Length: 449
Image (cartoon, rainbow, N blue to C red; front, side):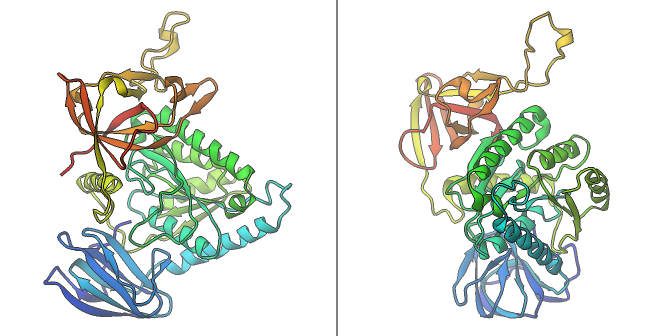
């Protein structure tokens, strides 16, 4: 969710544009928020002087400076009033006293009640001992990821460890775009660093839109849901804490079908609809046949702004760079050189699948969307992001009967291909050998600048 000053009139401007770096104080009245877009050139330092305030559900510690990198958008909200001090420049920062935060925290209170009931239920009662499984849906730029962060942070503040599931392959809240992932949230999410990466379960789809390979996207969602179901069956604490599922903004046609698929496969029992009456009406009608599913309409924040395709592309590039270098360039990735023979690159799928009726008897479709095929190492790999599979054999990358897919250990970035010497140079987050020689290629690329 992006914040800026273009979608609603600001009751009182704090500063309208970037200027020379200065220290200034801003007083926030109760149940108001300060919406900030950090300037494009320098970071912004911010601290809480008095009162209480939070950023996307995470409380600010008093008198502790936080440094927000350039271009970051966020909002500081207070329930009871606060004074904030800022040091640096902003593109925009303005006060807003009309927010949907009360309705959001009311949802949290209902979820909290469900978690408590699940915790005190008999473990033998699988339905009663299941905490809330919340799926957040809505069109692009409606604030889904931000609401997810709030619900997770508020739950963690109460001592729960909810599971965050990210199905938005276009941006990626947990790891690089092109992936679906899940991770337990044990503490309120850091306002600057974001989602922790200690224990994520990641599957690499390889593209930034499901339309590239719908069958593969559904198959990976199925695999992730099955893995989480297994974990919940053996962990009463995680089961009671439940999950919060963030979804993509494609809500029409095939996108809507994938949304219904996610609701079913994750057994979601709370559907939060942001920003669209039509989608709420459609899902409400579907829920009539699902007595244990509640569909709730929520207002999107006035701070949400629409982002064009160019902005999204840049945002993906920032996410990839952040994976290797850290949010504040505080990580040191390693450049490594390997022989072509040391690495095995595979691609999943190969375009639309021909109907079996059009093929000879017994023949398999050539372009099967779940087919794993080897990729020759050549210049086409330059600037691609490859996933490092945990697979120990090629057939472990993805098996169709029964379906099973290996999750990934991390990602590498191809910086050079030397055809004559048969050498490949890649950037990895850490030194040492890769966990596996089996790599997965999609269409995700990045041009390091």
